[in-house]
Length: 570
Image (tube, rainbow, N blue to C red):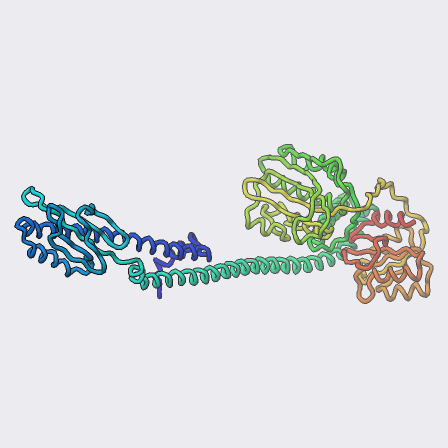
C-alpha cells in the first residue's frame, strides 16, 4: 500500500500526536466492542418499535374488517377476516368480540389462548410478545373489540442473528489489540534505538573532540618543549647583557625590547603547555580565599573603572590543591576575558562554595567551585562549543591569542579538577573552576628575601643536557654564581664522570634526554650519592616516578631563578 507524499506527512504528524501503546490498543478494542453492543441494543429497540407499529396496523385493519360482520351478526365473515391473519406466522392469537363480550371469531396457535372479555387490556408488551386490543367502531357506534397477540423473537434467536456480526467484531477487536501491541512494541523499540543512536552519536562526537584535543595537546606540547629549549639560551643571554650593561644606551633599549619579547614568548609557551596539560606545576595546599582576596585590587585595575568587581569569598573554605602562581594567572585571564566581553561596562563577581563532582569525568570527592561571572554579551552555542580550543578567539586581530580559556581548562585538568562554562547571548558568562579539596594544612610561605651575592668559589657543578646551547647557557649562569662547571651531553656520560670524579657540589640536569632521563639519573644518584643535590631542569610536566622533593627549574629561567633555588639547597 502506497501513501501519497501529501498524505504521508499528515499521517506521521497524527502518529506523533497520538502515540499508540499497548494500553491504547486495548482501549480502542474495548471501545469497538462497546460501540457494537450499543448499536445492537439500539437496533433491537428500533425492531421492537417497528413490531409495535406493525401490530397497531394489523389491529386497525382487523377492526375495520370485522366491523360490518359484527354489525350484521355475520359470524362466518368475521371468522374469514380473522383467519386472514394466519398468513402472518408471528401472530399467535387473534379474535373479534361482540359488544356484549362474547367471542364472534378467532384463532390461536403455539399454545396461545384468547382471553375472556373482561380480561381485555390495552397495549401490553410481554417478554416475547405484544398484546393489543382495539374497539370496533362503525359510524360512531361501538360494535365490539378485537384482540391481537403478536410474538417477538426470543433472545436466543436474536443472539444467533447477531452471532456472525459479533464474531467479526470480536476478531476485529482482537486484531486491533494484537496489531496495536505489536506496533507499540515496535515504536518503543524504535524509540530506544533512536535514543541509543543519539547517545552513540554524542559519545562519538565527544570521542572525536577528545581525540582532536589530545592530538592538538601533543602537538602543542612538543612544540612548546622545543621552544623552551630555544628560549632558555636566548633569555639567559639577554639577561646577562642587561646585567652587564653591554652596549650603548640605544643598544640597551633594543636588548630590553628583545628581553620583553622573550618574556612574552615564555608566557605564550606556558599557556601552550597548560593547554597540553604538560606544564610543570608546583601544586600544593593553598588557602583559596586569601589568594583570591589578594587579587581583588589587581582585577579591579585590570578591568577598569567601567566594570564593578565584587569578590565575595566565604570566610572559611577548605584548602585546595593548586599551583598558586598558575591559578592567579588563570583568574586574571578570566578577568581580562570578562572585561573584553563588557565593552560598555558591567559587573564581575567572584564567588566560591564547597561542592561535589560536576560530572562523570571528575573523580569522586569534595571540590571548591570558584565562579567568575560577568554580565557581558555571552556566547552562542557555536562559540561555546569551541571556547576551549587553542588559538580560537572572537576578538579582533592582535587583541588576543585565543589561549586564555584553553590554558585555564588545561590547568584545571592537570590539577585534578575541571572547568565548566555556562553562557548564552544576552545573559553573560559564568566560568566555574573546580579544584579538589586538600587534606593537608597549607604551608606558610615566607616572603623571599634578597638573593645572596654570588660566592667567589661556590663549588663544582655538573651540567647535563643534550642541547649544546642550553647546556652552555646553564653553565654560564652557574659560573656567574661562582661555580666551576663540568659539562655532560647525556646522563650516561654524567654517571661515568661522577664515577671518576665524585667531588661535585650540585648536579643540574635536563629531564628529557635520549637514553637515561634526568628523573632516572636523579634517582640513581640518590641511591649512590645521597648527599649530592640534584636539580631537574625541564619545560615538561612528565616527571613520573620522580619524588616531589627533588628540586626543579622550569624552562626558560633566569640566573636569579637559579640563584634562588641553589640558595635554598645550601
